[in-house]
Image 1 (cartoon, rainbow, N blue to C red):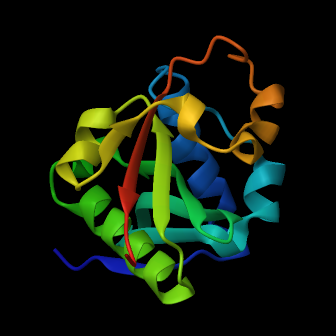
Image 2 (image 1 turned 180 degrees about the vertical axis):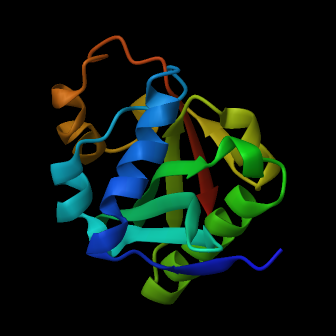
Amino acid sequence: MKLVYRKAKISDVEEIHKLVNYYANKNQMLARSRSSMYEGIREFIVVKYNDELVGVGSLHIIWEDLAEIRALAVAPQHLKKGIGRKLVQLFIEEACELGIKRVFSLTYQPGFFKRCGFQDISKDDLPQKVWTECINCPHFPNCEENAVIIKINE
């Protein structure tokens, strides 16, 4: 299976939106708007197989020493093939190159991230800046996501 991992392009937004919101509709991740995807397109990496989008994720810089993995999704027919793990690895490598010391995720799938080396963390231990976008979430303030973190560059 020849998978291509690359930075997202504007032409990928519709496929990204469809995949992310497929899982959001199942309450397995948060929904994302098209406008947020266009605005953050430089943060996304997509995974293509025969020109079909089969995986996606983004690395969002929060502060000088903190970044968040967001919108990580793999097409159902391509689960358990290492695509999600490879995306996480790419984001950690990118964070290392930028000199970022910690990468976290707010997730409904903490077990996956723990298998990638992340550890549980209390959401209260994350800086207030993390929560600036939460106010617009339909689940706020009753967030059911789990916080996980990995320390790098130390």
